[in-house]
Length: 629
Image 1 (cartoon, rainbow, N blue to C red):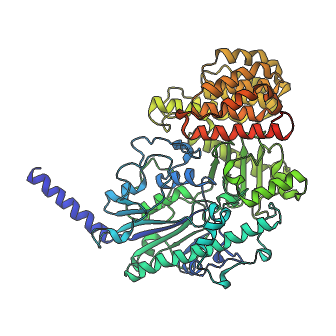
Image 2 (cartoon, rainbow, N blue to C red; image 1 turned 30 degrees about the vertical axis):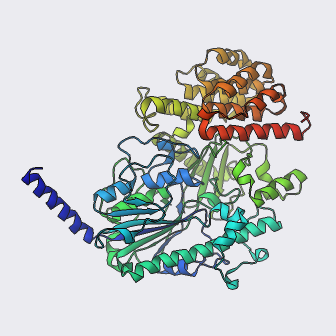
Image 3 (cartoon, helix red, strand yellow; image 1 turned 90 degrees about the vertical axis):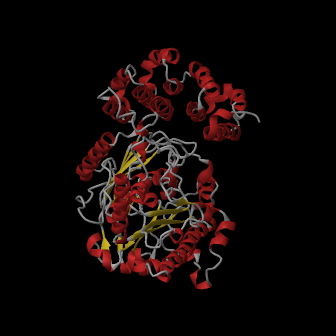
């Protein structure tokens, strides 16, 4: 290196160090699977004295929401400041590839002179790029930075209140072992118990455990803040406390109701930085905040330029944009089951669009079915003993649209979508939803096998709807996806869309025709032809499903079995799901279902999911005496 370049490098390093000395430290205390069941949020049962005190000295946000009701898709959004549906990280337990220009926001902090540590959860659904962290492990800590004067951004994650802490008695006992008798809860006295759960001993115990795990979390948070005080850093550190989504119980975690997406968010800004942060002590803010806003806000507080590709926006610090009018959320594949749902919310009203309304709310999924509350829900449903609010979620179908006035209906039980008095709110939020889908290039409306195929070609999924010469593709996909759930009135348009040049559109066309059922059976010949000529496996599977809905399984079963045996990983899952959906029509291929249970090394996570779906299909057939075991 020349002398001149060396001098420039030294000068730049000195400048960064000088700037860093004037910047706040930033500490994130993140929790898993909790809703705002804290005393400072008005919960009458919560025992959370430390977090209540932190809120009294900082800002408590009453309208903070996640972009998903489950951890990994949401965490991918938090670390990048972008919607999971723009990145291709929307499906639970997928593995997307980031384009080169999109990096975790910590990369920009490190380049600006911050020491960044993560203890220890990542779970981003993509390989963490080099340079994202100075340290990311169970030992990572701000105390380990080589220069004690270097500002830090440090994350600590509490996993004790994860749904497994409720479901697993051993974990629950370990996490709460230090609680005193006064910090324990009486399950029969918890007035906040939701009406969509059965009032059984098991369900009440789960609800009680949630509270006690949060009390253990409160003590954990206090210890981390005390460490700052002991080091003399409390007055130089901005503290964020948040959860990755709502409570880890049915109809909450994985869902887009407030029970799954409304989270606590408390931020404490020391007096020395309040002017810079545009924050005050003892403040309650009803500003709409999305979880993808966390990263941009940290960058803004640290004086780092926010990359233009980020979809999140800062809500603290200088030069803030106008507050949000809406927050958005998405549900896609949850482990082995697809259910494409979208949400948009303002401060009062919540709109939900169910893109797959013929699927019940409670599809059978291996992980949540292990919980005691879910077991009681299913058992009492089968016995016909559930109260109406709980039984509703076992309906065979879902409404296409849902609208809730959360100001008077916090549990979101009274769907106003068909109430003419709320037609203006419905239209406004529906439009906001459609605009968001198109503006953000919602990849969740493209069937997963197609995404994987195009990722292989382009190197990532982000570019699929951005680097295309087909200028109307986004519009055609989103329009056809909506038509697929609009019934017989959409039949002509859906049949026409079967000829679309793009497989993502043809998939929704075939899906929509199947959803219509027998009124669309005049398209049977066209669908049968697709089984032979269609190049996309997932479109062939959708066409086969339609033929089954027309009561022509003899045409569909050979195709479904071939896809099940020969398809790539997610293609195989789509075929398995259809075979599970068609019930007794799958009886002639029982032997083939058993063959498909054999593991295939090329299927990775999808192989496990296929086995779960096939086993469920076989169990259902046997339980209804359709097949002799």
